[in-house]
Every structure is written in structure tokens, then in C-alpha cells.
Image 1 (spheres, one colour):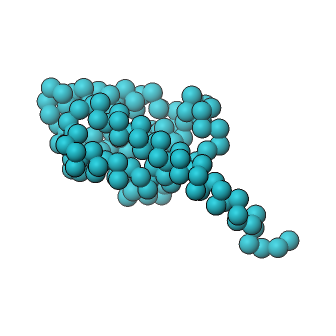
Image 2: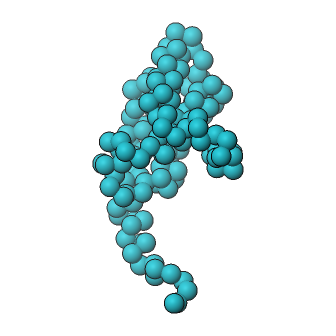
Image 3: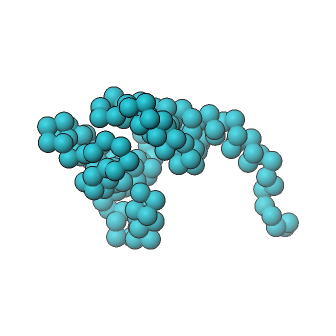
Length: 141
């Protein structure tokens, strides 16, 4: 998914029309893929998601990240949990895999919720205080 993000960043002038302002569309498409999986089985549980799910999830995440006037933005109020999500998401996912908690939308919701909780705690307890220790600029004016 990191490489998909790099491709999005490097080709933003071509791809932003498919992402910016399309959060609700991608949320519905993602929900449709998840519901479709319940009947057809297009997703594989574990660390090997189908390419369809992977791409739809990538577009959803990118549109979520660029969505600026939603409930999430008001709730976060300047808290940047993106690095915490990057760091902790696979720890949470792999822990759920070890416990055998796969194959259900409820486990997906659990994984997202726990990841966001860890990321927010990391931001508030580690990252934000550490950034306060950093000088404003490495160059004196």
C-alpha cells in the first residue's frame, strides 16, 4: 500500500480528480466490496488481500486523508495520527490474526478502532511532546 501511496503522490495532478471530494463514493464502493465478499468470497483473510479490495481500500484511504470538512477533521483538531497508524496498524492486524480473529467485518472494525486508539495515544504521549522539544527551525534568522 505504501507504493500505491507513492504512485498517488507522484501522479497527483492526474489522479486527484478520482480522490478529492470522493470520500463518500469510495466509502460506498468499499462497503460494496465488503458486502460482495460475504456472498462471493473475493477477499482472503490474513495478510494477502485481493487486488480489488487493496485498490478500493487505497482510494478510500487517500480520499479520507484529503477530506477536510468532515466529522473526523473536527474530532481530530490538529492531532496528526498518520504516523501512529502507519506504525501500529500491522501490529494490531497481526495480533488479531494470531488470535484467529479474521473473516468478519466486526474484526475489521475492531482492527481500525484499536489502531486509531493506539495512534492517538502515541501522538498525545510520545510524538506531540517530542515535537515540542524540537527547535522551530534548524536555521537561525
